[in-house]
Amino acid sequence: MSKKFENLKGTYDYLPDKQIVRENIKEVLQSEFVKYGFAPIETPILCKFDLLASKYSEGADILNETYKLSDQGSRKLGLRYDLTITFSKLISSNANVVLPFKRYEIGKVFRDGPVRFGRNREFTQCDVDVVGEKSILAEAEYMMMTSEAYKKLGLNIEVEFNNRKLLSGIIYSVFGNISDEILRKSIMLIDKFAKLTESELFAEFAKIGIEESKVKTLQEILSSDYARLKKIVQIYDNKMIQEGLEEIDELYNYLTGTRALEVMKFAPYLARGIDIYTGIVWEVFLKDRRIGNQEFNMSIGGGGRYDKIITTFVNDGIEYPAVGMSFGLDVIYEILILKNTYKKISTVDLFVIPINTKIETFKFVSKMREFGVKTDMEKKEQKLKKSMKFANKMNVPYVAIIGEDELNNQIISVKNMDSGKTVEFAFDDYAGIKELINS
Image (cartoon, rainbow, N blue to C red; front, side, top):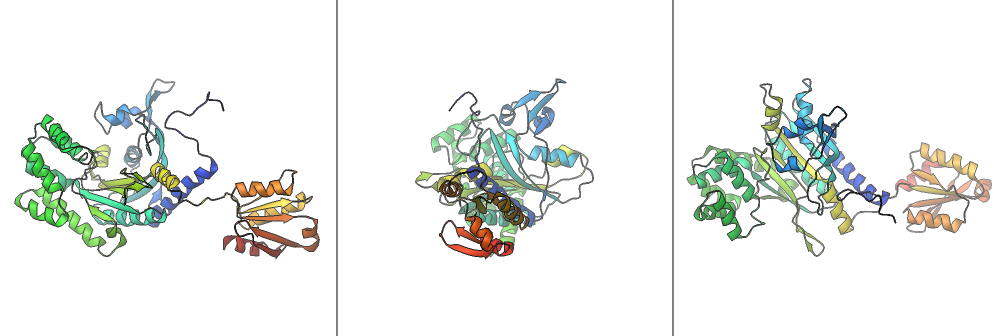
C-alpha cells in the first residue's frame, strides 16, 4: 500500500465497522442530552484568531497548540480548539437567547499537541452546557446524566468531584497571603499530585516560594475524606471554604439515594487545572483504572461550573453563570475497542439475493425499505455461496433468497445468520418480516 498519502499523525480514517461504534457512542450521548432538556446547536470550525485568543493570555499552551491560518484577505484565522469558545461567541451574538439556555454540540476540534492514547490532533468533543443557571440543581443533573450515559455505554465509572472555592480557600488559608498568580500555579501543581513524587512536589512548590511544612499541611488536608476535611478546616475563618462546603452539602442532599451518588467520590485534590472553573468540578474515570492488564488513569470526561467566562466574554452587564462538561468520545471509543465489548453492528438488517429475479427482488427490497427495514440486495451475477459469504463478512443478521420457486409459490424464507433458523412468510407479508427482524 502506498505511503504517499498517509494521514497526518493524530488524524484517522474510520471504516464502517469502527465508525458504527463511534456513531453509536454519539447516539447514546445525544439521547441522554435530549432527555435532560438540552437542545442541539452547531458552531463554526473556522474562527477568527482573535476570538480563539480572547480566553487566554499570550503564550498560553492552548494558543501554542492552535492551528493558525489566514484567508485570501490576509485575515488571521484558526481552527477551534474546543466548543466552549464558540458557544460563548454564540451567546454574545444572539441577544434573543432565552436563559437558562441548555445546549449540546457534537463536533470536531483541533489541537497541535502531543499525540497519545485518546488524545489526537483532530478529535470529536461531545459538549453539554447550561448558561444562566445558578442553582446547584444543575450540577446534580449533570451527575445523574453522567452516571446514566456511561452505564448505557457499558463502562463502570467513578466520578471524582471537588469544589474550586473550597480548594482555593484551603490554599489561601494554609499558604497565607499569596498572589492570584501563586494560587494559580499552586492549583496547577495540586492537579499533578498523583503524577509527582513527594520530593518533586516539594521542589516545584519551592520554586514558587512555598515552604515544605506548608505543603505537608496542605497534603494532609487534601488526603482526607469529606467528613474529616470538614472538621480540619473549621480552624480557618475563610468565606471561600464555607461557600465551597455549602455547595457540596447541597449537591449531596439532592443526590442522596440515587445511583449517581454511588459512583461519586469526593476528591479534595481535584483541581481541573483550567482557570475558568469557579465552583464544583468533576472528572470521570474507569472505576478499576484498568483496561485488561494495563493500568489506565486517563480521564474519560469531565466538567464543572464556570460562572465568569461567558459573563466576561459578553460584557453587557448581565451575569451568565454556566455549567458544562465534555464527554471524551475518542477515548471512550478506544476503550470500547480495546475491551472488545462493543457489538458488531451491520448497516443492513436484511440482505436479499436474487436468482434470475432481479426485477421482482428490487420491488420487494423497495417495499421492505418503505416499511423501515434497512435492506440491501445482491447486484452482482455470482454464485450463491459468494453472496452468502459477503453477507457473513458484513455481519448482516438476516438473509433471504428470491428465485423462481419463491415467486411461483409466493413464499419467501428469511434466514437468521446467527442461529441458522429459517422462517417462511407470504411474499407480501412485509410487516411480519419486519417484526421478525426487530424481535
